[in-house]
Length: 252
Image (tube, rainbow, N blue to C red; front, side, top):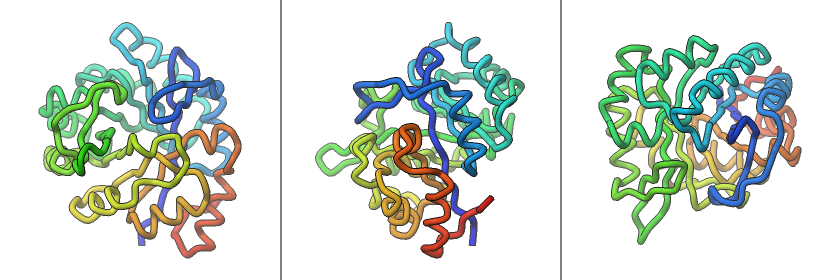
């Protein structure tokens, strides 16, 4: 049985970690490098850093942040935000990132998934999908959740998997930040139709929610932000709780 992963997510804006509800009303959650180092010490399996307002002008800022993170953590970390080319990925990997996450750029240019998988290997390519439910249809959103598309979530997830994505980072926008539990049904369906790992994001508020997303939602990893940032749940205590529930965890 594969080990399940707990992944703190740091949404970064202007060099600060921020967190909102349903992608709105962001508030400061601290220094991303310090938080990353803290989570690594706490036993997090991986980290995700997302530059949520990334533009090309901020590319240098993100590279500098990656360098600082790499100097302070000893676990794999993924970086996303404004990545649109092989050159962008090269810069981030050379700065110390282990994987990259792409969303809007993949929707705009699906061939980018193929190109990155071919150049760097599928294990390096995470496709993030921000999904929202409209009239019984799960639809993909881009640009930090600001732009809805007509693309169906399940069809898109299957396409990027076929194109070489190594993992899907699925964020349910309806669940994001409200802490009422993860999107179990959509995560379960994706886990069943795809052969690549699914990282569930959005809605983790209690330790029991993490049990549900692993046992019922069949997620390979669970990602959360505010419950960790604001010390509502400790990473180490969560992993021990999950282990006690017969969920296979890496314990330090």
